[in-house]
Length: 304
Ligand code: FAD
Image (cartoon, rainbow, N blue to C red; front, side, top):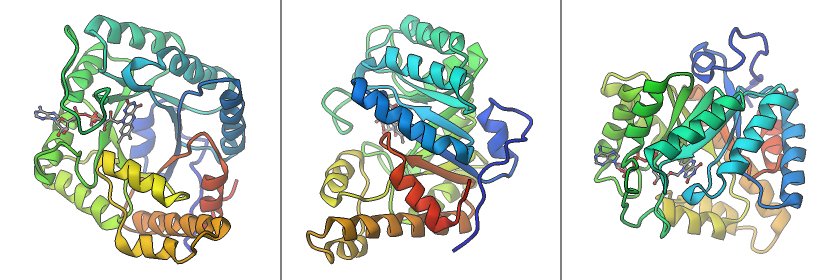
């Protein structure tokens, strides 16, 4: 296994993600979602505490469908900024918001000490494959949100990327054109949807580089701990689980511990392939738990 160390804490900018990604240091980052209740909140903070010693480049907090978690996203990212050594990034979508409302959320983020935002279109209520209708007075594509935030200034900007293409994109080439348009509009880095073949990531990076854009693209890592759930989610968001991986997991029948261990091993292998293939780092979908990420770190020899 390769020996990969977490980000050095001595980099010049404690807040700007773009500069840290461009410094050449290997990046690790963790994604959380806004908890729905007190038990969820406790679980989230336990995960943050367990992962903080690994000095991630940043941690991100998602924005719920339809802006439903707006206040929690502001509160959690603000608390991370105030009470931890971590660099937070807040997500923001166009769903259900007028431009004035988007501006107000950005004001709240700035007021909470957040200097990094992940800008997304978001999905229709009916799901990622449903036809998209923008809100009156709102924005149509993530590119427009990037332009708006770039115009305001004050934030480093991340955007979404799709190794297997966005489920509604006309083709992989058209999908790459959209990512490149987001970079040209002001996005400074991208994070990918979950995927399970390193080749899909490498091909996406190549498509972007062929278009003359050197945007850092962080692969999003989701270990398969429950095959059925990942397959169902994958169908919605356009991520396929390769047959050889299904076979490796199904080999263990109903043995939950063995299935989990295999899911972790598969994720660690993907991480190694990605890092060896030139990925600038790894972004972990933690689902507000630390255990799986730490099990992968153990296999990658990442230590505190
Ligand atoms: P866009 O880049 O606007 O693309 C949306 C669709 O429109 C694509 O099919 C694209 O090809 C097409 N398109 C874009 N521009 C044009 C154009 N000019 N002309 C024609 N077609 C165009 N969702 C949430 O609700 N909250 C979150 O916090 C969240 N976090 C995410 C984090 C990551 C890392 C990722 C990968 C996704 C996340 N999502 C989140 C999901 C995301 O909102 C959906 O995938 C959404 O469907 C697409 O968002 P986008 O920003 O890529 O949209």
